[in-house]
Image (cartoon, rainbow, N blue to C red; front, side, top):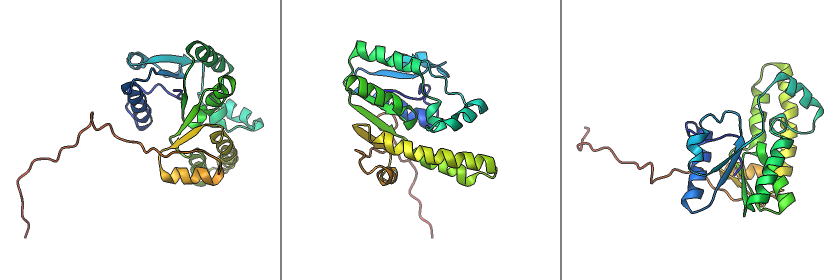
Length: 219
C-alpha cells in the first residue's frame, strides 16, 4: 500500500479512510507493507506497530519555484511534486526482497509508483481514487478571482484530465468511492476497469445506539 501520507493518528477524513483500509487488510490476515513520504511522519511509530512501514525519500512541499518550473512539464504539478527517483529505487529494492502479490495506491498523485512497479515486476496494481482529481483543480479555476491563478489552474486542470485518463487505464483495477466519481472517470477513460467501493464505517469499532428516552406525545 503506497500513500501520500502516514495516516496516523487518524484525525482527519483523508487519514481516517486510509488508516481503516490498512486495518482491514491486516484484520483479514494480509501481511501489509505501507510506504509513504518521510515528511510529516512524526507519529509513524504508532502506525508501524501494526504493519511494516517504509518511509520514502519524497519531498512534496509546495513552492513557487516548483510551480514555475512545472510550466515546462507535461505533468500536473500535484503529480510531478511526488515524483522521486530515490523513491523508485527504494520501492524497487523492497519489491525485489518481498515479492508482493499486489500493490494498492492511495490517490492519483502516487499512481506513477504503481505503474512503475507493475511494469518492472508484473505486480497487479490497484488505484484507490479518493476523489475525481481533475474536478478539484477545476473548482480552483472556477472560483479563483486572481486572473494569473485562474489561468494557471486552467492549465493544470487540462493536464490533470489527460493524466487521470491515461493513468487509471494502466491499473488492473481502479476503486472510486462513489458512483458519481466512477461515471466521471468512465467519461474521460472508457477503458478503465473500475469497481465502486464507498467509504464505510467500521461497525465493530463504532456502534450506534438509539438514546433511551420516555415516550412523548405532542398535541
